[in-house]
Image 1 (cartoon, rainbow, N blue to C red):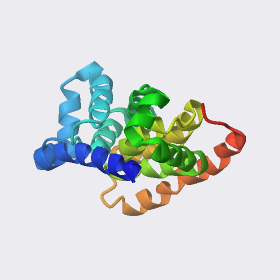
Image 2: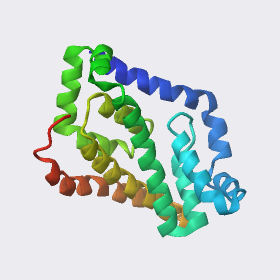
Image 3: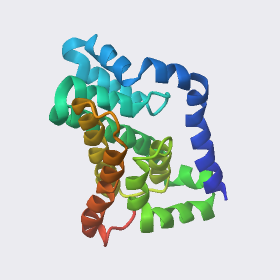
Length: 211
């Protein structure tokens, strides 16, 4: 039960900035607004874009608008690399901070029973949970934190978050670079790619044990 409360507490913690600044962030970082903001940094626009995607861990910055803007500024290939790297690093930071607490602190925080429940959950379905969460609002970094607390193996988490982040980054960059006005179909179709990638990659982790 404590595992669920921690999950909800993390979700609320990340939701609070959205409730406070969400509308102003949406206005400031529409695709057009994000493009203008990035262009102010000229040759360092890529670093500014990465910074915004990393800040999405704490603030209500619309990451998909930033990715689309990076596509407009840099094109599909370079913009996709920057965007995928940004969302990948955001998940890795959240995971690493929580994993750094260590198993003893995690057991104190979650309780012995819920700690082992979390370990079992991420042992059996962690890859799927991480991969699918990358396409959902609010959940990506909450799931990454829970994966860290539950000691999901580093290689397994890194592979799963990459499977989710790379298609996400390139999809929204493509939308931004091509100026698609109704991207719903493209998003729906590409949202299935992370799952397909994980079904392939997971074969390498069948015998993975937790550290």
